[in-house]
Image (tube, rainbow, N blue to C red):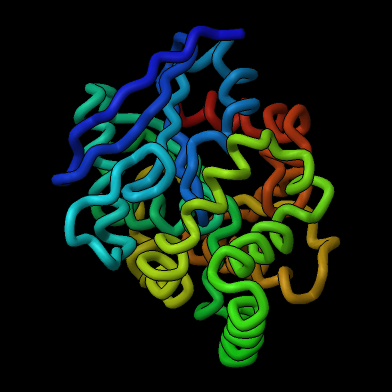
Length: 274
């Protein structure tokens, strides 16, 4: 096992828990819903033979303390947090990977903090609003969330959300401590984060003007219909950037479900932008 250095960094008037592994060019991973560094643990371990890998818990999630009086966030605030972490650790500019809501944060980082980055890998951002059936998707998502909260409260809805995106066998196989932390972020996700993540739509013209190398990536489209928007949104980002969509293994969480194949696909992209 690679030695892991941990700490709390001051960034954007908050404290962010982080982990650093390995040596070589530095890469950053930005998590999505339930914002915990632990979902990237196996990936970080495998990449640490070639890269210095930074993972972190997003503000108010898991081991990053919730700021006093903080009740709601924006994607801009989350991007400023990431930029602040990069500066605090003295690794600017850096290559970054963001997944799901973390991919939305990375898009904001690309658009507003380009000097913090060498390049970016944007994995399945949940940009419902860019798709032709956005209204229908929004209604379906609200109904799923509303029904889940009615049945099991916010904690139950968080478990349903994680199971839906991970699949049951992946969720059930999570390290117990990690699963507990993910579920403990229920109030932050539904109370502070979900609205901004569900409604975020980047400006296509702004993306077209990006000078950094950015890869838009998505896993197999072989998934339930209600999750196909994740692939469609990534394809929209690729089109806005004027690039081709990059095919990755697995569904929405290959860093948990298909780790070896995921690392094999990710490593050459990091080499190109590091």
